[in-house]
Image 1 (cartoon, helix red, strand yellow):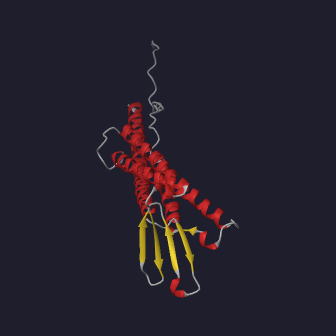
Image 2 (tube, one colour):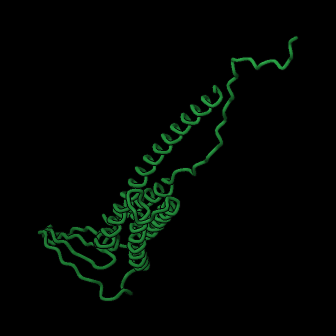
Image 3 (cartoon, rainbow, N blue to C red):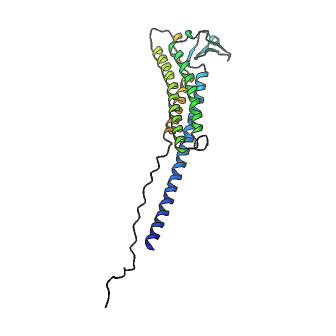
Length: 238
């Protein structure tokens, strides 16, 4: 029985090695998926902060008297004036038409980015390898990839208004036709928005690449062992 023994031993060795590689790939894929979802949630929180803070445009000017020094903040929902004494007064915009075109677009795109990000978070939870919302592994992988794509879209929706506003601020800053009081500087909300967009795009990319490769089953090749015992001769001896 040398042939049967060699075939059984080779099959067991190949099966153990394949199972070990499969488990290792699943662990790595689960870790990458969890990291991508975590970065996506952080980016989504950053978009909310970017949308809420009234620090898209910052104007700092000092008058002839230091008592009159103040800092002006302009956001997509309100404008604030901070006095040198620490007092701050904020006023919500009376009309959306009072905003510039870049801030109007920023208001719409950031809200859409937040809504899209919520969808991505729910899909990332449903497609997580540690959850049981979806039983089939193939369907779960597709849900995770969809969540990654949605995170990337959410990041782009946040990146567009932030870059648009920054470009407008820089263009106006170097415009010689504007006086010093009309010039603006980049606010903290823009930098938070850039960071949030980067986290969403990176997290979405990790989710899209977290799916393990398709399992390929190949037929095991076995080599028949040569029998040491010689076959009996069919010759008749007289």
